[in-house]
Length: 243
Length: 243
Image (cartoon, rainbow over all chains, first blue to last red; front, side, top):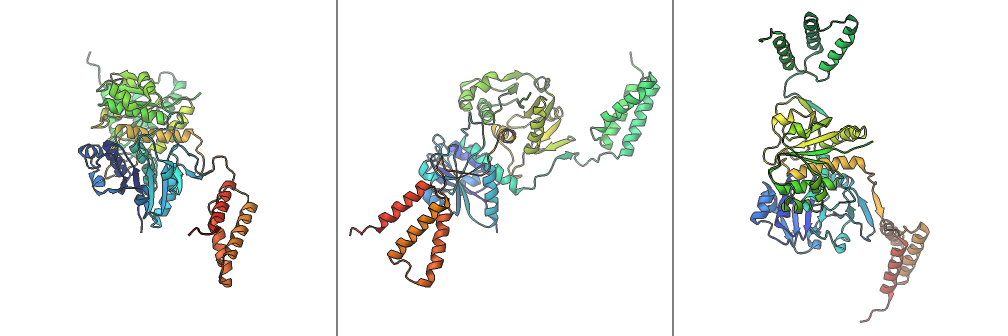
């Protein structure tokens, strides 16, 4: 069995931020939201508008009075904070933390991530309940994040471990890269046309120019259709000028 | 020499999103913002408030009429879009793209990232100007991101390559983990106290209980001061009950 981390907002102050958090969670495939005494209604029109289509997360969110109650049934809880405070704890980056949670969730261990109120962040007492601290690596000159942005970055790191991220792809939308043979035919055609119109005037420069042109048209990994487009361009250019 | 990617917002509609983008950029150590015919004033009170301390980025932002003008002096430009459209291009994840840009920026090649308007995203004509597409891996059910969140995720991937991210750290705030010798003294003390108060009643169970206790107090990697706290707790518990 498998599960996903719970996102726990401790005393979020603004409905808009709760909604934006739901949106960020949905972006990352996280659906379990818990709120500890929120300052505004998480189902208010402002919250729903800010969730931008993620109302189902708001509707299913569970409300608690205290952080203790909100994490009582969880087995591993990490607290997000940009300061380490004077607490003796393990500190993970968001990436390392979500590596751990990925493994734990696959073992069906219930994991949660605590996020503090917008202005103050998590209180020391809440942090002391957590198993470890998550510290998102950001510009030390300006590391205060909007609440939903913090949720997004942590959720993104979890999502990255849960999805088959394709390697670099050359997307041709179904069109096939032309086989080399077709490309070489195009080279011949282009070179013949250039010979005909006198482009290769200086014989000793010809081999170098030919190589340059072949490089130019090798780099884009042309499809068959794109080669046809280029044939058309050449033919068009070869027409007699109108003026 | 070294430089940093330019963030180019094409026709951003809301001042608030421009401000939040500046905030996200500052979070990631990016300071070069360009705007292509923004729908609202990037220095309006709304924008400045949303930038949450990143006004300097707004103040230094450069405004252009067209995407072509905004990227004219750049050498490599990637376009963010969640759809591939019908364009034949390389597609990178945010991580792969910022790996490339990290390398290119270190070679002093000027790089830029295009972000489209909030509702529609980048137009095909803008995408066709770019060298490649960035596709941020997100929940396919809900991959539409707020503009500033898209900037944040891409910027975050760049920042991660530019900062020495510490490995997992056990943060003790200067306190030193007690050497094993001190820990073993504590074990002896605890076990003697438990012997004295009759906790180890059944002799054959003693070795197992001792091992369990030693495991419990080995796991937290206690500091010297924390050991002192525990000595205090034991001593306090050993006092005669008041009632």
